[in-house]
Image 1 (cartoon, protein in one colour):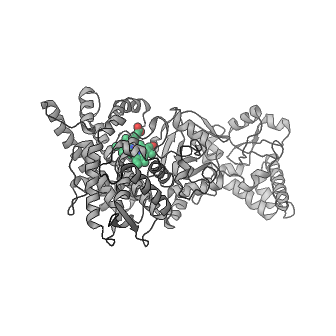
Image 2 (cartoon, helix red, strand yellow):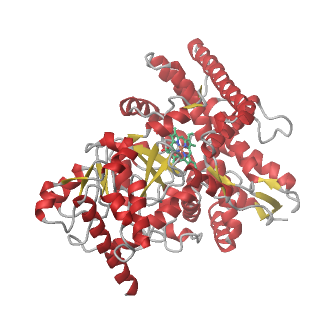
Image 3 (cartoon, helix red, strand yellow):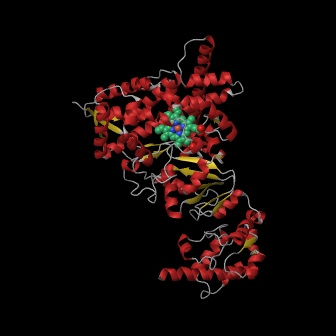
Length: 612
Ligand code: HEM
């Protein structure tokens, strides 16, 4: 109770200060000159911070102590908020900002003051902050977000915002999504962060996630995806399906692509999947001496690259079998993906002289990818035009799509080829590596999974799509792995209309991050969130709260290749069917966030054959 009283007296004291500020136009300096008995030191510091720092929100711990309609103070440069208050009553959350020449008070002021609405603020402050003076009453969307939504304060740098905070997290070995989850836990289900001039709102509020992802009323964020499309100024995945932000163009192209990813098509790949996966199984069998350490992250990467190359583009890449030089395409993909990671970790990398050589290599790799994609495309086009036999794969589909729709930009088709290679490969490899780690750490789950695989397929080596569909526990294991370790953790939207998230107004045009990694690790949605418990996904129980788990995202922009999950299921079931494995306990089991989330230590395992 003592703390309640002290918060309350602070709030009342601040009311007085603000009244004093508005009744006395030279108030700012006067207030700071007041004697200690009237305004204590803490309050003085607070007021000077409020005035000097351009915007300020009340310390979070005060919010529960404010009485609605009585002690609420809202000082803001936005008439919108004031009008809202008159129409709808006091806002749910308290915003406490000083913005410039015009200030609006809400709360316990006399009715006459409320209706008057505008009170001239201290002139010295206005002059100190010219950006604030220009703004007057009407604010740009970006400024409104700055003032409305809570977030970590003060920012470490006026110009860079939270970039230095992010860099500190990186130094501690943490990554962006971990920083986001800490902020959400601390400030509530909607927070804002500022990265230099960009504001990003992060939401874990289920209703807003529904609005942003399901309704189709909002688009992917231009700021986030266009940079990825043209990385370091070089066309990378350009305007490929993942990064297309023009809603109309995307709807058209997605409709053209959908038939290529239907379940029936994937079912037809069953035999090709088995052949490719068996190459890895045979390789592991040759190494299964209980001692040889194998990086399963690397092996899975090779396998998924071989699979997408073969079944998607008719390319024989032989990464799994090849013990010498990787193919040119493989090298280029690795380098390009490394470039994406480098960009995500350090947006200023291109300004660092020491990195220029590396960036030149990355750009060259991106050009190589396009050249090789073009060669494959042209070759297949000729085959189709000649009437030769061609496999019914993604490349065939893309070539025919172009022939039937000549208005389609050829460069965009190349973007898509690169997109499918990248999107379809690393995500699955990371998922499988995390799954092995989780199984090794949870032996009871591993035993139950082995029992299920044995029940369904015995020691049969060919595993069909039907077999995997019968493995309910395998499905739960994969889902739980994706909950804790979603390879594609975040998606970014731009709201096309003003929306409200938990009482905060988010003006149209704001960049909003939605993260399955964040939502799926919140205690309030998933009790004991760090516990690996596939039972959460038991279909008989329906325990997953809506819009809190979305490793493939939700709504129209959901992953087009999610049914390729069948490939991951086949791989995992074949591994647990044939091998016992141990992980090297000395490796790191931390997560590395680059373009995707992956296990930092590389998931090193040693194997023995089950029947040995
Ligand atoms: C475990 C495997 C996979 C995971 C976790 C995954 C996850 C995702 C996520 C989260 C998105 C949304 C990205 C965003 O909003 O920025 C996405 C989109 C996409 N994924 Fe996947 N994906 C997987 C496998 C695949 C495969 C195998 C393919 C293709 C062969 C693929 C192709 C795509 C494409 C083309 C999009 C863009 C869809 C659109 O915007 O219309 N993905 N994926």
